[in-house]
Image (cartoon, rainbow, N blue to C red):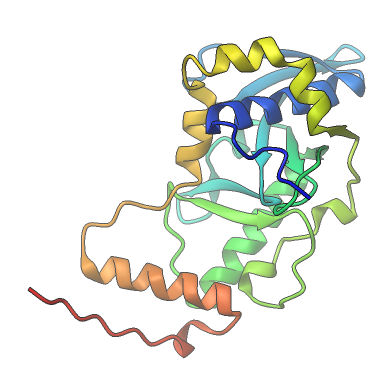
Length: 231
């Protein structure tokens, strides 16, 4: 098996996923219009049966989605501004063949992000504001702090699934144009999920411990790190 997205630029991969998300929403009877005046945020007005709502389009190539916390987890950038979250996700991280589209009520997504934030804090992790925090679409069976909030697709099934090859053929012109310049929304989505900027060695070490604990599925106090700097 081959990775259908391999060889494509980051911009083209992102654009392909967004087009899948839009196509999936349209298939469910929604009309979409990009919200002006929102800076770089990928927020849309979606209208169905005469009812307009605000929606955030999110893309993921590992089946985890991120939103940055604000005010110590009491608020969420972008997520607090919408009523709907539209997600386009690959069907497999290692060997993606299709893009799956999900439509979630934002209230449900916020509930899961609040629970995930609380679980990480209770585990001794430091969740930084303005830094994307990740929650899994699929249920995470590891039973660690990062598992909390996962599994939303058990409640809300995908609305559409599109073969990647079909999407590439249908959006050839748009994808070619996307190679010319990076999408503003792509820049923001990438920034929201990126690592925080550190100013001290202590901050780097603390972050590294948190990441190792999450990967290993152990408590934070089980991770001990030694740093050696040679000149």
